[in-house]
Image (cartoon, rainbow, N blue to C red; front, side, top):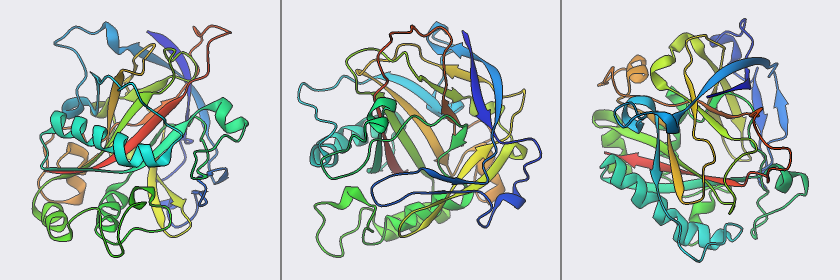
Length: 314
């Protein structure tokens, strides 16, 4: 267990007032997200539990809590700065892991970010020109009630300028089947799940990732904000502080472990406000943030990590 400072939206933030461009982030073609508007964040010191210390019966799961750590050894030949290798090889590894854990019929990786504070400061890029991003020090979720389904439907269309997954696609080719996806949205179950891992050879000490138990989050905590891409507008969630939030992390994560983080599940308990079938005991998403662990050594190596987003159709 440790204590870490995490950044929330202010308590006066209202869900409805922060729509329609009042809070947004601009992201350009190269992946930069340096323009922020309307995000007056507030620091809160939170107790962050050591999830490794939990017993087998207490361990956190993707289904119940929105996150789960698994063993997922990497192969010998990995080049995380090579976009072609990522899309053509690593994406399929992520898909297989998520398919095995969830039992879903279809899993398609469609996006990734590599994060390193030193890499961002030195303007390091992938070989396709995409910039390395810094760790995100703000409590957030990657999709909303609206943007989760919008994104899945966009993946049923020909790829756009920001869609790196489509580097080998033929004209008109789509990542997801439109009929299958729409049927799952309307009468089945869909999800978006991130696979996060360290890509450094040293265990993570600097800027570790904290994840929030889905069961401790309520609709009143949510604040919508926009991400403005070069060719579309998405929505994410920022979060207001609540003493009910139950935070966890996995100390010293290594590159042969993967942390699955649910970004949206149409059958989750919080998803019931959208209508349709839901399960009150099933997690909808897990908020997450980087934080500064006061126990970190002064000479600890920089964190280097990758997250890959996967579309999931049951």
